[in-house]
Length: 123
Image (cartoon, rainbow, N blue to C red; front, side, top):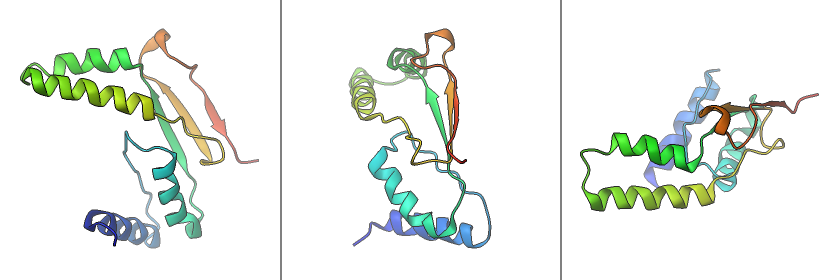
């Protein structure tokens, strides 16, 4: 049985596609397995699939979070730090066969892990 939130999400996505609307999924944790679920859901609509990959190092994320976490307890801060480690290990760059366009956004200047680039997989 599908969780309630997934059923609602799927209904909203398909309903929006039926109305001809653009859809934006904002998911920091979207790995290949999760992306496949969405790709299969919308394949009959043949949408243009665009990925925006914000290239931010783990260190920059930690620095930014440090300033945002001033009101959190030490236990909360430790939990967030552990979450960053887990998410960094699971991070999967979008593949060209998954998307029509992939845009890499250098969110940290010259310390970026990759150059800013844009892929067009359509001929």
